[in-house]
Amino acid sequence: MKNIVVLVSGGGTNLQALIDAEKRGEIKGGKISCVISSKEGAYALERAANAGIPSVTLPRKNYADSKAYSEAILAELKKQRADLIILAGFMTILDKCVTEAYPYQIINVHPALIPSFCGEGYYGIKVHEKALEYGVKVSGATIHFVNEQADAGAIILQGTVAVENGDTPEILQRRIMENVEWKLLPKAASLFCEGRITIKDGKAYVDYEG
Image 1 (tube, helix red, strand yellow):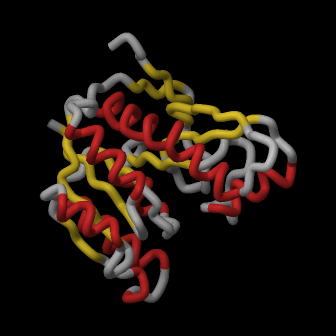
Image 2 (cartoon, one colour):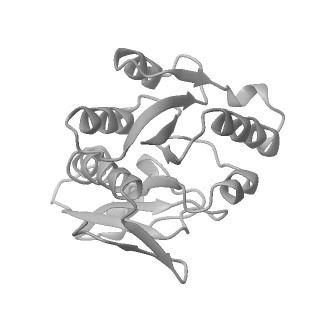
């Protein structure tokens, strides 16, 4: 059984989707063993407590720079014996010391179809604002591995929703979360834990049949 460590910073809606999926038996070969928060008092910590999942708080503000913080995160991941790390609304960019220690073991969800509306500065509601400004007819979310570049790691899964007339960034954000993020993130976690993701030439290939 692989240990899944989830990194959070806020409300933890994606964490809740993972918890619910695990309860339904949809994450095969793995379990959420720990939640690490970059902020004290994040509601995600309450979600973890309600599910009986141990948590650790490492406030970003307590560290001088990104490297010092990343080294603290890395030490905690090793302590927790993490096999898979999931960034679920984790609002801190990690130094390469973490990505190099866990190559193709860190998963993130980006609320757009990479390579569109991604990279440095594209996060949260800003992504949906830009998508609507551009006038795209479909948007969605991407589950990808994390490397040293923002949103540049191998793509695991993608899903789409239609952009509707009258959409606001908030409405589009909610539609993508409910229809794509909350479904594909647990699916990607299960695929990883079952050993059904293969990396070849920097790309991720998924064995859907198992």
